[in-house]
Image (tube, rainbow, N blue to C red; front, side, top):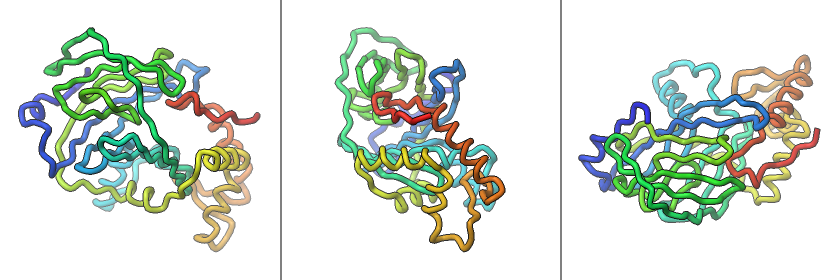
Length: 276
């Protein structure tokens, strides 16, 4: 693993209840399953005393910039991201899907049936053990450590007797690697708080229906969703793109093309089939 900074935390321990333990993962994934192109991002796994949050690092960076009155970095992915929360020890998850200015909240019950292996290895100061599972339409291999006594991991993966340090699927579409950990007092994030507070709860059927309606005409979907906050037909995407009569058709087709191309989710068995 690259630049892993866990030794100090191992010495201090992970039992302090008043602090948040933040684990930062390098995540490499194939957005388009037909192309051999990998995208790389950092994700945070924040284990708070009562709740666990998993989200892209862009939310953390954006929050830091805003609090210092600085501009948001170009290319930030607030508009195409997801946030996941759940209570420690619970299999209940809340998945917040950010569709530009619309945030859908999908509740689910998720757990993996892990098969522990006797295979072990040591990376830096961590003793890792191998485990495998079939989940979400993929075969997964995880390396976890009981040196860090949290039964958590990236995304919705959990339930092993220790923190998941490495995780990958057999298609080589996804790879998660723990690279850093921190202890933080009283973390706050205006972006995450806003997304959670302004989300709309939907059923699985309604979620699929909303995604298909969004795909059918992203611009109309977003225009209708934001009409109460606008005084004209112009509005902005979260990346700063101004949408009006002159470019709405072009932006609409670009959004649709990206939805079709980048449809290779972690839970492959829940991939939505979009019509051409």
